Length: 449
Image 1 (cartoon, one colour):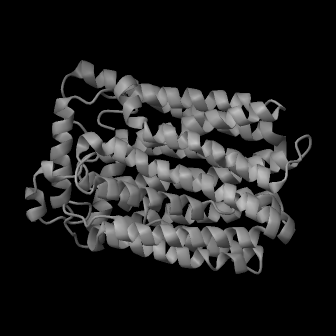
Image 2 (tube, helix red, strand yellow; image 1 turned 90 degrees about the vertical axis):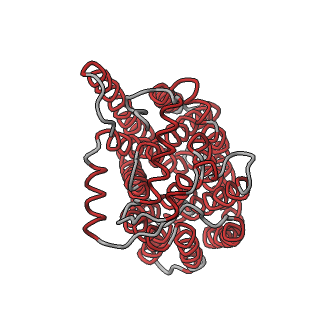
Image 3 (spheres, one colour; image 1 turned 60 degrees about the vertical axis):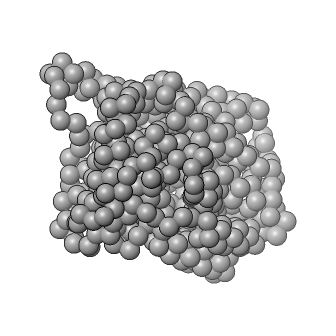
């Protein structure tokens, strides 16, 4: 965040916008890995895409579809965990590894994938990642054992690692700074639609034909999204290829990890995703048990609340303009907390309300934090975004696994307790950032990170 989210200036004035424009242009000439000065640095910032301008709608739709495919594939087994547990005769915590393995592999591979995108291009890497992930997705229904299923999901997650960081880097390079939060919000909205549609579709299909057919259908949907993505996404105009020198990559990563603001953003993303991963990994088990005993199709439909996330993510820019970045994060954390507490009731209506609040808070917080990383990093944006995505999906893996363990130990209240601790961490980090900003202000102007 530009002196943002965790504690710097809470508004984007003209000076911030101008500096962001300069940073974006310089990213092309000095990207994350080696960055020779090339003609791309001379391209006027005004030639970048903006709402209503040439190519913006195609770009938005292409990345929206990439987000749909990414989340639909990544979480394709989450709504099916009770069925997978029954089919392979394994516990909830064992079945949860079909989610954790995918998100964990993504977290592990997102940084090297972002380095490859610096060398071979954002669009090329995103396309290759989708092709491999879709191919593996078509093999998942034939997994003969829980071990084979987990292994295939890990490979799928590693392939999908080429999408998130490359997409945000593409947007940072090709979209004007004033439109960046909105553009990234639309990509995150695609994530929410993918997560929702994948779970809803798998729920109803699995109820009739089993979980294997359900994940196969998701694979076919992802094929269509991948083809449309490649046809729609405009060729990059501001990308400058860099070399794959490990020493330069290590130095860039070290510089990002030495930036306190970026580290706070990484932690916030991880903590928000810990809540979200835990809640949605376990909710199916809760609703299949008494007193609810819901069928799989109805449980899958619960994920329609993701539509709330689509709205909250796509309006993150307006939220920041009204409340500032810190204010937006406080609101996201408060909304998530309220949802967790409401969901404790043994009422299906209140559980649904709780999920709505949790989903709205999570996607708003994620959109604000992820866009702030791209805005804060003045160089090495792909690696800065990759580190955020890595932390984010580590949070997903931790949340999925610990959420299942907490549910096994203490029921739904155990999972809620885990979520409340994570939200408390978000608030504490944001408060600390605000304090750090005030201290810097008293000391006078300093070079911004």
